[in-house]
Length: 233
Image (cartoon, rainbow, N blue to C red; front, side):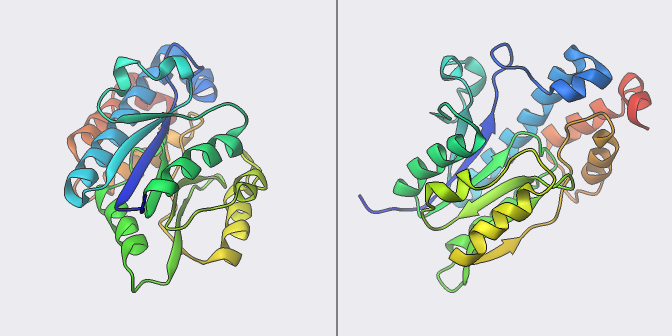
């Protein structure tokens, strides 16, 4: 079957089935950390929905748990099970499935609610343009990770398995695997919220958005509540 169009997939965990934002919970409590995650996922969902409507791309959830595949939280998009193993294995599993069907595949994390629809549309356009020389799009995080990876070609499993995850060199090591295989377009660096101190940077990045959608505005309002703001401002 020929590959067509584009897919955008968000990697998520299901509350109640996996631990959620454990390091953030140390600073603000489990309930608040899970509430933040829910708002973050809602913002990512709204971004993907807007981009899918504007571009015709197909939106997916990549769900961490097999038991989470039928959870009502993920009913708005098609669902793929991440599979077992470490993050590299799970990334390979999702991307290998989607690149067989779609000419462009972009994966995003659920921890980047400040990602704008315009940025994602631009990434899709870069990878879809036959005149473009770019084979990959990467959005790096300030902590050394990445919040977005997009490709218009199939990638070998070794790319994912050779990249160390949850270290301050993750994005650079991923880029080292990608650059011999094609040109990379870098996006703006964003904050990945893992700890309480990251919330002040997230607040700044949300405020800087030119046209935040409603879900991003709701997250910004949540961050400004006195009981939350006092923890990071």
